[in-house]
Length: 338
Image (tube, rainbow, N blue to C red; front, side, top):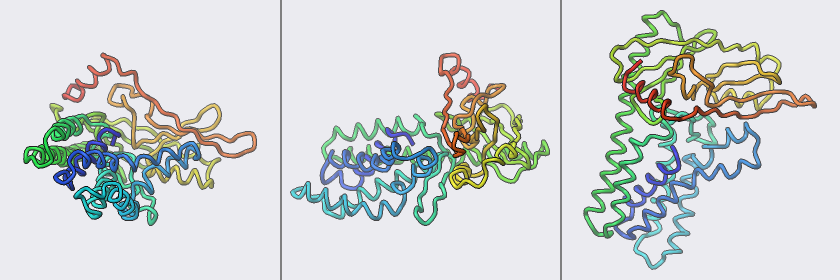
């Protein structure tokens, strides 16, 4: 999830652990705990494209990190606030829960979180919430911020914080229910249209859990469709894109390419470029894919051989022009207007 959301979640967890003992210090250090795992991006200047993709959400997002580093931070904070009533156990639990809830929340999104690193570099992803969702974050933020204005002994402070946790958790639960319902519609539509597939990924579109998209892996390519819970019918129109696997043939056998393809979990298509080939990461799809004709993929990776015949990688990101017309069109599709 985005940094603000992780700060709010971390602050709320810190408050739940020892807010009654140390007041707003619990909110502050909980927010710090919710931020620390994402500091893995500070290593980016020393990593190439594939190494960045592989390192992000690995060690600092793993359960091992939480087990190893929580007692260290717990000891440091206990030393810093040795005259406060919070114990070493309190501080350790604050950081442990701050780290683990951060990682688990990230696993609900599309990117993939290596929860079991170093035993597995598989990116756990449930695809049930978009990386930025105001319906999750804003109520949570308001309630946690309001709690900070009450004394640490106030029952109202605790109630506000737990209400924030309850509402945000209920929204996550709703996202799973919505995803399950959308999956039924996608499966029924594909069966009705005779679409054969081996597996599929469904996920919410930006900023909501009403409009969902699916990408289904067929024999030679992928089928993509959209469905809003507010659609007047359950008819899903699918667009097909061939994988074009042959374009990758000259580059096979490179370990970094193997890792990149592994990161996409096999959900990619290829297109030829002037210098080499581009890999479209279908897990993220197209920001405006719900529009007729679609658009560029959010993430694509360019591959080419340099003058020394060394394989080069470059990430290329695309974003639509988010103007009034775009937002109006997107809102209409979310509300069920096809």
